[in-house]
Image 1 (cartoon, rainbow, N blue to C red):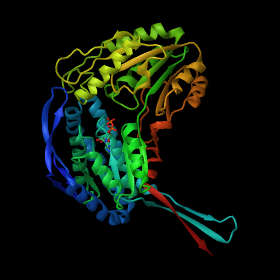
Image 2: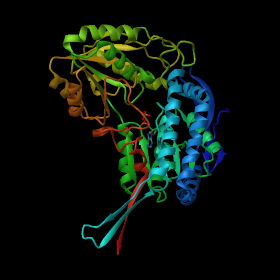
Image 3: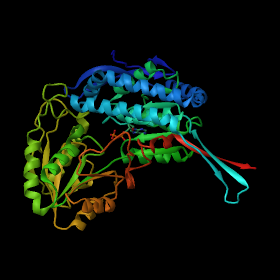
Image 4: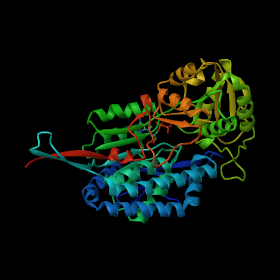
Length: 474
Ligand code: ADP
């Protein structure tokens, strides 16, 4: 698969206003140079999406679904090639990249199936003399903004439901990882997506271009995945034209391990919840609360497992932890660990940059007290701060002591106790005795400042539909 590095607008590959390098963070080499969109190209993308909207909305749901199904098949067939692009521009290890590509493809399959299940209602009014018809229509041109940590899956999780619902799209991938998004739209084009239905632009000036699109009457919907900080700015921008928004924002996931947890399951689950994607996930375990009764054993075993992880460039043999997307992101992790250590953290393993070249940070386990500053931040890396607790209720209080509420993890052998904890924890998702629960068929999303709306599952398509009520006199 030849690397695509131009903008994709109206079904054409377009060289933009200028080019900037895309960097491989494992050795800081340039992979290729990517086109940037100036004002002209941004306008071209909005026009292309707008002009395609009516006919795409009218395209039979079965046809829309079959295109998505074809895209799923192509993506699975070409998973290795796409995963290699993900590794190169993101830095993660090949296994994580391949798992991501398969997970990403599943959004196309799931929403291919959902395209033909957009339902409505026919009801009798309570008064009996009228009828209520409720139908669902595509919202219209949707702006999709995605982050660098899952460059394939965050794109398909939005494109899948948008296309199934009958919306046309403009995707703005993260500046660090545009090549994966272009590989995904190349597949969509080969699967038969009509010109203009999916467009990809990387604006020269992100903030300005996104603001101008959110003020353009042709843009009806915004689906954003990224930091809470940027999400807040975009919500304000969207307010001017009451643009419909869905927001998948930051997380600071707690893990609560009760004294009756199966220790093998808890260690393995925490390890996966922490280390999937090198810890660069909004679902990553960030605050690990362990019952004092089992803390010594748990910490020793987690430390042992973390210390054994092999850190190496993502495509190299046996690599278990790759590079982070950029030196800037790597340095953010290092700074947070330094702050934790200044605040009294006891470093069990890792805790220091050990490589000269590349954006690497080693697996790190810290024992901290409940007030340590690191617990207030979303650490986008392989750092596991452990806090001990005596009392279940106190553990839940600490888990809830955050403005975030995306996901939580609970480990216990007593299902009743685990469910009581899951109900008391303020988060949109709770994993019980598992380290990963993301699934295209389940509703992903947060409460509090972790977001608005849900992606995947039966809910995901609703972010691209609006209801129309038709009242009939009979
Ligand atoms: P992360 O660092 O987790 O990827 P960000 O919120 O920084 O989170 O970025 C998520 C996406 O939002 C990226 O595509 C990024 O380029 C984009 N972005 C960043 N700042 C802005 C902004 N001011 N306006 C619009 N989009 C932005």
